[in-house]
Length: 282
Image 1 (cartoon, rainbow, N blue to C red):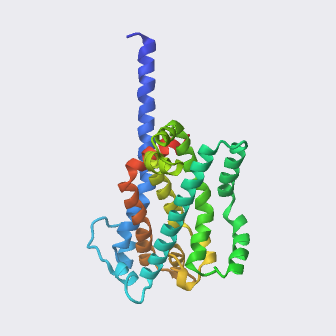
Image 2 (image 1 turned 90 degrees about the vertical axis):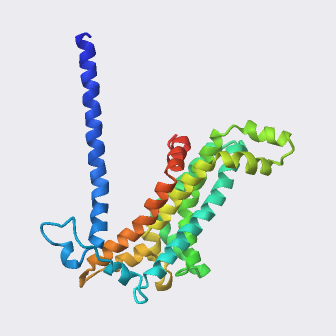
Image 3 (image 1 turned 90 degrees about the horizontal axis):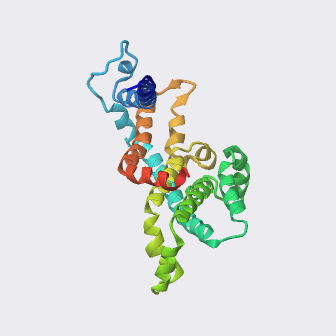
């Protein structure tokens, strides 16, 4: 082996070591705060701030008991978050799938302009659309209602879902639909029986991402909800007051907010990775 080959091999090994170091650092940066939050939610107030910190202790579920007790109202906030997130995701998926398929197969003259306009509505900063939506919802009597919050989430999720699904449908050959139509299917039946199953990874990936956007939202929920329709992120912000921070409940609330999305991501990670690599990052 000559000197050039040895140098190339050393350079490749050094690059691989650096990649591993950055991956480990990224994992520490992302995972350690979450583990710390979960452990803190199982400690008492004194144990949470004990120095040196204890990693082995007798866990207590006192804060979770307070959260889900009849006086905590956390179950009500949690139900509101589920209704708003799932409702917005379902509407965005149905309309985004049909709209994406229509644009992908429509052969419009200004298809690129239409596509860019769709995704540009998603790029708009939230404060820019907050006031027009607030005035519109006020006229319609939707402020403080769950329906208004679902519509607000859908205004941001729908362009994203439409754009992603359009990309997926473009990757599926139209000839498959044409073959199904030759066999007697209508155009919509060919879409439902042939194209839609092939776009299943995209549907799962889009649905999970829309669900995450709505589940984690604070800006819309803090403006468009009332006491009866508040979601978990808004309720979590109430734990910080001038009297101090309720650290125990803040940690347990953060754990409950995080857990459903982590579990959902683990269950559908195969579809999520396949879906994003198939269309979203192209």
